[in-house]
Amino acid sequence: MVTPAESPEVRIPLRVRHDHRLGGRWTSLTGGGRQWLWTGPEPGRDQVTPGDAFVDAGGLEECVPTVRGLPDHGDAWSRRWQPTGTDTATVECPDFTLTRRLTDEDGVVVADYRLLATPGYRFVWAAHALLDLSPQARLVAPAGTPTRLYPEAADLLPAGVWPRGRPWHIADWPTPAGLPLERFGPDDGTALGAVLIGCARVQVVDGPDTLTLELHCADQPRATALWRNLRGWPDNRPYRSIGVEPMLGTVFDLAEAGLEAASDVAGPGAGPGADTAVVPASGEVTWQLTLTAHRSPGGDHR
Image (cartoon, rainbow, N blue to C red; front, side, top):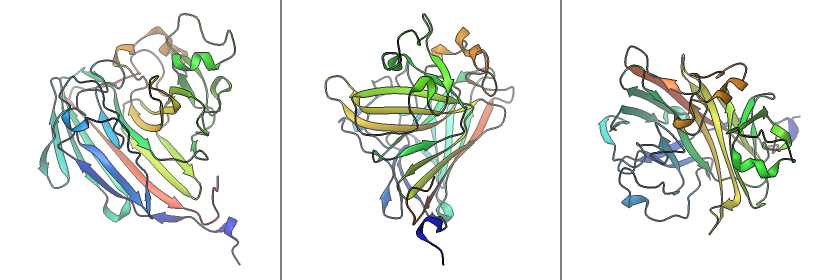
């Protein structure tokens, strides 16, 4: 007899919905009666124009060629995408063209991307996925993954830990510099961002449910960004939002690329010049993001 704790995982078919009119935004990711994507409180998402400040409407936004910095969350999210075939759409931006094919055949969500630009063009891309998670949820990633903490984490660290004059601090997952980032936890008034360098596959475990996000791309630096906002942002009306964001590149802001501190990292994504994607001589970069879901009758099983 199989006990609940020993019950095998069951794959849960996922279904995705999107809106080409609003930046190709993923508006829904459902499976097994669960909605994985969070809906944000900010109004005005349907009124944005290129160059506008980001509107935190939730879902999954395509952020390229930067996340932080300018333009805010990139060029693609604020532009209308044009359907170019079955399940395929394209957005034209000043420096690049991005095409995406998004399917959920057989219950596995697959997003295939192709970016065209001048050889040597550098960019960061993130699947800016904001997830609807309980305080018990956690992020599973390989222990020891170099994790880049950003300045908003400085006040949460013991005195003297934050490196003076540096734009980030790098330490090992799952508790970089002593911060238990793998656990999302209850609201505590904090908000911070981090980048798990070289980490192309993560799992979000929330009770019996697991969502796996995996990024495939040859010859480009990959990472997973984390935004853990536990009602710590914005200052005037804070709310809870959790972002788990597969990335090409290893920095939030394209303008940070090549800073000396990038050389602090050993291994995947290390060194100046390895912190952004770079368009090769062919003029194109292709990559694929897959999302799968599983459910364990025994509850949180990891």
